[in-house]
Length: 255
Image (cartoon, rainbow, N blue to C red):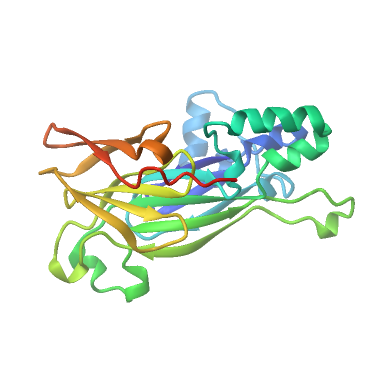
């Protein structure tokens, strides 16, 4: 699944795996006239989204400001690559048939986190539930496993929660530059314009920790591959610093 953050405040999701079943989710050129004209100039094809193809794409509106960052993780934590999990999956493949293994690996849904630009004065005029610049989105994949087409579902994106960085009433810099899930998918980090890094649980809309160490907007975040054990992650910011943090080590779930 591919996720895209858009300048108009929306996030788009495409199930590229649908291509393997004779469908073409890439036929999106004609959605906007500007894109259609650009393709014509560059000699690219233009195709209309068929009803079948459009079942494998969806969108959600996070706000009016541009979406600056987006990350995805499977709702099924077994899909994440963790120490020992690769061996577990490999053994399962030897014991189970291919169809059952696909059910084990392929998630029926995903969770996305997106961060938007934002102006405190403008956001303060919106209803409280619309003021967040950090959104978590549930992306449910289309289900066409049924032989009865009328029972098949379409791909759907739903906003689960919205929250903000610093207080809107403080007039601070509420925008978000970067967001990144921890490799095991249980936690994500958000780098804000307010110079802080915030850590959230995947199911929570409240920060687990607020880390201070930069003097400019946090623009880059990356977790160590074994972050669920080591707790290590690094951040970069406009102040030229790279900070290395250790947060919530030894929090790997035992399956």
